[in-house]
Length: 102
Image 1: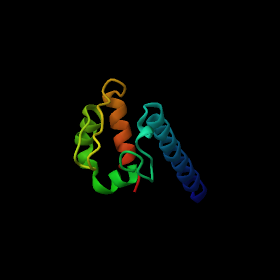
Image 2: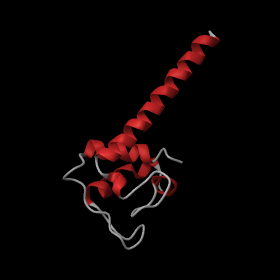
Image 3: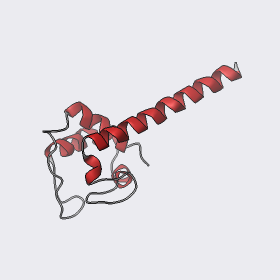
């Protein structure tokens, strides 16, 4: 029984790790990494800074910001709209992933 539980936990951790890699790959594919990185500021804030500032309850607002752009929250450089290249579903996936990066 303990072996089964260990195997299940190992499989679950591989799935989560795979999702994290897949979502980072999605961020790269959508061009997000031109302005953002997981752990350092480029043009926009690091994803870990975003995760520290926001909660999962903010997901809808953050998806809207990804799609429509915004300014003033992280300084003078505005975030450009991305709705031409990022679907709402992809934006939701990205935001949920970002919010896990504590």
